[in-house]
Image (cartoon, rainbow over all chains, first blue to last red; front, side, top):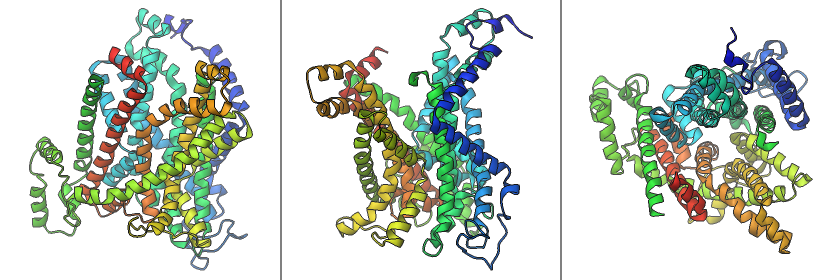
Length: 296
Length: 318
């Protein structure tokens, strides 16, 4: 049921506004060619990960001891690894691992960080003090060192690596959403909503959150790029995805031992990480350009 | 100024305390019996019980934290479970190696980033700008462990120009030390160079649009003098303030770089301790790196307020 406050002219909500907003957003985004390329590449990676069983030429875990360390050929477009597994298939299935790690760990950080940041910035006082000091302390740790330590405590495995990366990202989202609330809570539309008797919960979730999302979206896309690299790093060190599940990081770990004999083992997984992370960074930069009014 | 330093220091104390709480909890929240985890599954019941007592696990967690903090204040980080050496001694032994690597990486990063950032901002929207920003984006996106492996493949395996890995103290063989440092420092410096370049470019653009630059032009100063002497000097301040972040990146990057290039620094120590489940050592490395960052941030804040008194005044008024 619509309430009076839904009709507030100052609150940037409503279908007409959002349709124009989305069109304007798409128009501006499409003008940035690099960001558009990044988006297409990203979609390609997502699609190949989603359709991996149909796209991959072979089973990524099937070993073939008659085809060990084969160079790229027609039968194996990117060659085979030390156990005769098809590298192209492992790269395609590895995209699933990487994207899953990126989405889940950033999602986790957002689920914890956003509400904490929103409440901390909205209510201020003791809650804000405590949350901000903990955030400051967590931000004092080097990102990878903390992720490694948490992963070491939790144990090896993809799900644990995702939790570790998620925890490390959380303070960044708390800080960002808090900063957004601090500027939004003084705006006229929030004051108007409050004057009309809207509850704090309603003001936070229905008014402030939608208007604070732009920088959070930018941060999320850039954080996903870092999360994918972090998962690959943990797997490279043996603390992330465990064999035989394909992961770009663990493929590079194996490749290290065969640099002399089979250097292609190292080319493809690294290139896959690089292209995916680059495309996410391009998307993030493109989003920032469109959503950050200071850059217009 | 003294008041500002004192206030800033008072803000650092709770952060430091919380850092110790986090590090302490991290190890004490290990699922299962920490003594059993520390000593490994093969040890007998008596040995586990002895370790439990030695670690004080029979006491409440808060008491253990206070005792640990008390030892920490005296510089005692505990002993390695692996070889019984004091954690602090091992850290101090490994520190110079990581410091050397970080300093060489910083030199590599800044000597690429500063000219690239200045040129990109000066010649905005030119080919130089596009090339520099694209290379910087690639530098941020490239996974450092892949870059490391590729450098080893090209320069050590294929061209045989550099030794693939290892470390030797500079005073024992300075030439070999430099040869061994080139690749890890490049790997460690690449992402940093990209970040610094991007920051410097945007802060240069901001400074180049200000009034005092227009005045400098109006005075008839040469373009080069305006850019290098007036703009760069001011643009570098905000870039230098994120030294804490840069140090964080360097310490995190050192973990993987030292592992790939077999450099016996703190980063490699972290990985080795994790795999040998030497948790007091892991605790020591994590605590050390966080405390280092807190102190660098504190020092940079003080230096920043000396360079730019407006910061001090705004904070004091607030």
